Image (cartoon, rainbow, N blue to C red; front, side, top):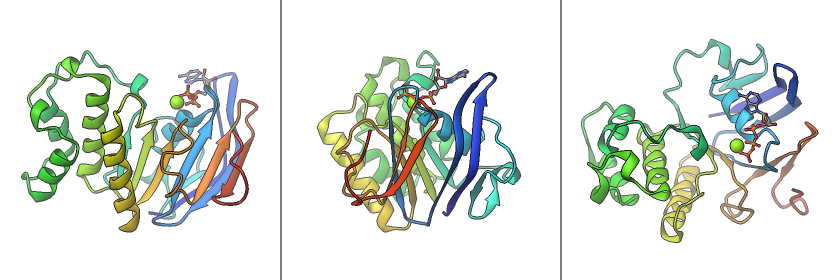
Length: 218
Ligand SMILES: Nc1ncnc2c1ncn2[C@@H]1O[C@H](COP(=O)(O)OP(=O)(O)OP(=O)(O)O)[C@@H](O)[C@H]1O
Ligand SMILES: [Mg+2]
């Protein structure tokens, strides 16, 4: 999926967070977003997902203004941990079912196995560890075979084996032409997959640069 951001400006009532931000990605490109706490990374992600209201002509997915998109079936999202109500009484199976209404097939089983969810399949999510829960959300985002996958700090609290699984899964998705937007404080995770870096700072300034063009400022 192609992504175009065109002079995007966003403010929470009085607070300007994103100022005149522009960049674009072709299908299959991998963007890593860095920036200090509060720089606006999650805000940008929420703008993409229409969780925050943005102006017309600011964000396009496959050349369609997101304000004209009704359903985001092609977009997978792994929220930052702080965004989720962990007390909600729902099992792993139910979380996955919300995303995947089709009959369970080989792909479903592959994802459940890849993220080692069999043992916790019928657990209530508020009984899971932080890393286990993160794996459930990563699996959920992948189930609908998104054309654009957005992950907001997906490795926080996840153990090394599962970080490797996630890395290899993302490498595979990239190979299959899926566009990926990753927010991470970890400079190494997926640096080998990254095509572009977007670095935000708390002065509403940004740098968008191709991977390999010098050091990544942070
Ligand atoms: N709902 C909100 N209402 C008002 N201000 C907000 C809201 N959400 C975030 N902010 C402010 O907007 C700025 C950007 O927040 P955002 O969550 O996008 O940062 P971030 O880069 O994702 O940080 P982190 O690395 O901590 O996740 C911060 O100053 C934050 O306080
Ligand atoms: Mg954030």
